[in-house]
Image 1 (cartoon, rainbow, N blue to C red):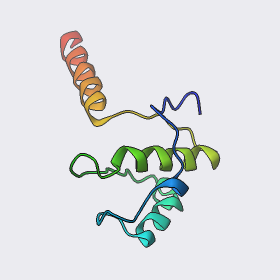
Image 2 (cartoon, rainbow, N blue to C red):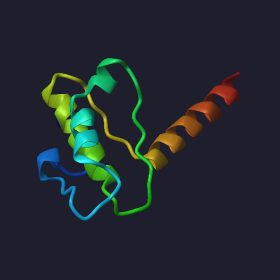
Image 3 (cartoon, rainbow, N blue to C red):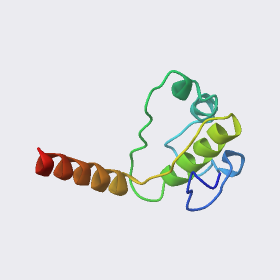
Length: 94
């Protein structure tokens, strides 16, 4: 869990499906099964601020850790910055 660098720890058991219309209970259950991860698919959560994307990502990450997967949490902004730095570093050394 330490290596994952979650900004906070929240279980999906605590996620309130009431009051939001983005994710159904069935969809959340399917995501929690982690079959998308076992099949090596990426999962990207998109939507406006305040709908629980970070909460869901952390909850899914915690589920994955408990099932033996290695997890590293990064925001999309951080990911884009790191990839951009890698690309710049690659083109400068070529």
